[in-house]
Image (cartoon, rainbow, N blue to C red):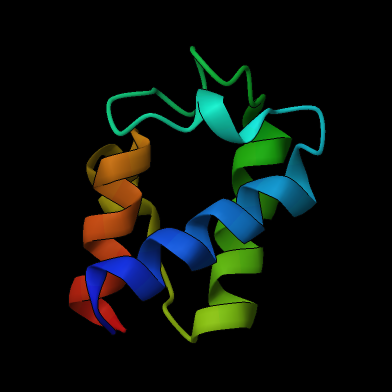
Amino acid sequence: MNDQDARQAVGAAIGKVAPDVEPEDLEGGARLRQDLELDSLDFLRLVQVIAETTGVDIPEADYPAVATVDGLVTYVAGHG
C-alpha cells in the first residue's frame, strides 16, 4: 500500500470513529489522543477499523508508533 492509499484509509477510519473531527484537523503531526481527542475506546476502535479496512493489524506493542496521524499512515503503508 502506498502513502496516498494509506492516508486515505486512515482519514476514512478516523471519520468513522470520530465523525466530529474535521478533515483539516488531520495534519501529519496531529496526535490522535491529545489533539484529535480520541479517548482510549476511540483509539481501540480506530485500530479495529484499520484492521478491518486495510488488513493491517496493529499489536499493542506498536501503539506508540501510531500515536500521530503520520505515524499511523506510515505504519499502514509499511505493513499493508
